[in-house]
Amino acid sequence: MRHAIIAAIVLVLGAAAVHAAEWDTLRPGESTQATVRERFGGPTKNTGQKIEGYDTSQWIYEGDQAPKGMTRVTIDFGVLTPQGYRADVIRVMRLDVLPEIFNRSTILAGWGAPQKLGREKDADVFFYESGLLVYFDKEGWLAQTLIFTPPQRPATGGAPPPR
Image 1 (tube, one colour):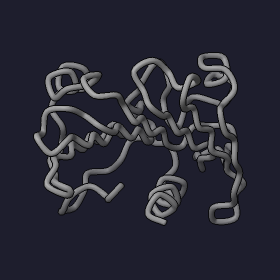
Image 2 (cartoon, one colour):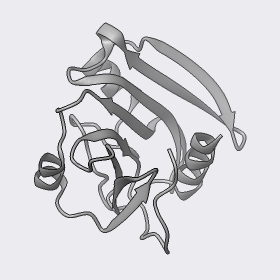
Image 3 (cartoon, rainbow, N blue to C red):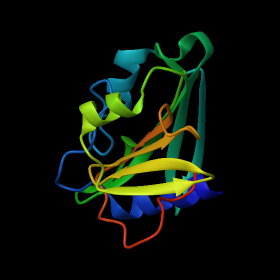
């Protein structure tokens, strides 16, 4: 349910003019299904649904099809842009990473200091206005999940949305 809420918010906000945070050359709000298929091949699972009346799809890469270093990559497509709805554009990417792939230093070196820090279930969460949420383990050192979205406006308080 909360992923649907996050997806609906991102869908309504649409892609901003500022470039999104990227991973492996993929940028939410800009990159398309064709780009993802070219980079990673077909998904392990492909499902579709309607969000606020728009047809969306979700591609999941897991097991042997997951990119190196990941246990699972989930990519949601369908974003409302200033030019109209684009069903083939990445809305949200969720990377569930293997331990030791991204640590706190790697995240800071790659994306810089976060604009906001939060906590969820006794673990640190980094929020980047460029559209990145990083969820760490309870020790605060190893990143467990990275969620990429189109650029976001600064949060008005509290922790980032739950995952």
